[in-house]
Amino acid sequence: MILQRQEDVTPAVLEVMERTHDPRMRQIMVSLIRHLHSFVRDVRLTEAEFRAANALLNEIGQLTTDTHNEMVLMCGSLGVSSLVCLLNNGDNGNTETSQSLLGPFWRLNSPRVENGGSLLRSPTPGEPLFMAGRVQDAERRPITGAEVDVWHSSPVGLYENQDPDQADMNLRGKLTTDAEGRFWFRSIKPAGYPIPTDGVVGRLLAMQDRHPFRPAHVHALIFKEGFKTLTSQVYVEDDPYLDTDVQFGVTRALIGDFVRHEEPHPTASDVTGPWYSLDYTFTMEPGEAVLPRPPIK
Image (cartoon, rainbow, N blue to C red):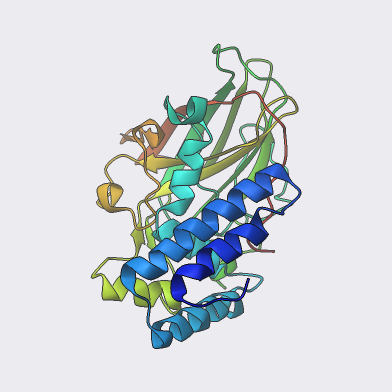
């Protein structure tokens, strides 16, 4: 089509998008063009703004490295990650779900940890945490033999790949559920932390007078054939940033009960108090067991 005016652009592009062979891809591309062109018209995007937007997208790609993923941070900071998660889980967004954000710090090949073992691989000062988890299906039946990949930040709010004082794979581990769907381990109570702000996302937050903090949480990625891979985060219930998570990741179902104990631990003789316990049940939905692509190496 030879264009004569701006109104001709969208029909011309839609005509081409309609030729896409794959039905789902065709649906996505047609809808994308309609919404994208409507957005450009709605804000009357200027040429300078268009060039700046292109530069920002290029910068996001250039900032993504083996240890940092700027695009994941941006998707979370815009609420897109949470929206996609909640639309696709919990009976297609109709019920609560254990599913949550993967986040930018999951790594493949976490070391194996036996139930009752520790996630610590280097000295990590902090208050001990003893977590007991259970994995079940929608009918509350235990899921046996599920792989549970766990990771979390240190008490100073850093993951080990961000912190030269921590050993590689510190505060990470992979456990297996027993016949009752249970797993349990020892670690250190995590702290909330600011997301990296030295890139595009940081400038966005500054323009909106937003803080960069995530509330403290424990990650879990659970894999079992016959079930949709579950990625989850269990949040500390009294964290000051619970209501204002910069990544919009907190749902009511994901708030855990981190119980503080002052007395000595009943089985860990080196723990005289204080220490924390966390009991949490994860519910998996039937589906395809596929591991996500790691955001970092």
